[in-house]
Length: 347
Image (cartoon, rainbow, N blue to C red; front, side, top):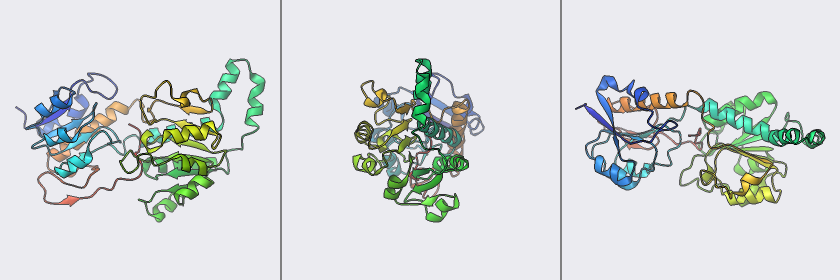
């Protein structure tokens, strides 16, 4: 039997079912660890939990009862940026660190956010449809109503890694930049060439509002109808963060009644997006299926990161990322890793 046993739900993979664990094992083989599967159900996990040294969380929600069944686990490791499918509070209460991948897919999500911004601003899908439907002459008149990008304002709600990467991409287009993030000091924000601002200032002054807030209990439904009412009628709302941070009914009403002009969304309050969701029928809205972080390196990078985090903690060292305040294995020290307002990336 291996020295360390890592428990994970069977059949649950990020993009390829049954993809194996070769990439994770690159960092685990030297410490004599093995990944063992259990049924992807709460009862199946609870039955297998006693005696395991770590958990590789994927494919399902990890409840308080499941975490409570762990009697010696040193870490719960996620191959995602978002941690909303794990009861972090329950893990913290048991002294189990929860690790994620906060910096693995920053560039991809930032590219995607910038793509949504440009595509919504220049009405890319509507223009494409005009050409395909033989409405060639309608294209130029539509764009003659749209201001040029240079000199417009992009406001960020949350200014973590992804938002900062978007800011770097947006600056060469001549956009003015401002950001609201109560967890990041003003010098850090201004050091990125971005004006620190209150939430109201961002909403009222931005031509583009880009949402980068993680799905924490505190942030659920953060943006409501009253917030969309504060935005410009010409404003475009971009969300590559987490769907539940936005009260979708408020966003839909804002779009239907013309409080804002359009939206570019990678995430939804309920996923997959339901076919009766009014957003799916709005020509001024551009949508993608929560895949902003995806690229050819997606599975490889996150799986290797999972293996590295598991290996670090099982070897008695600090993980690279930890989303909760916790007592690490074999240590009497406490460490706090602050959770920024951003999900980061999309997972």
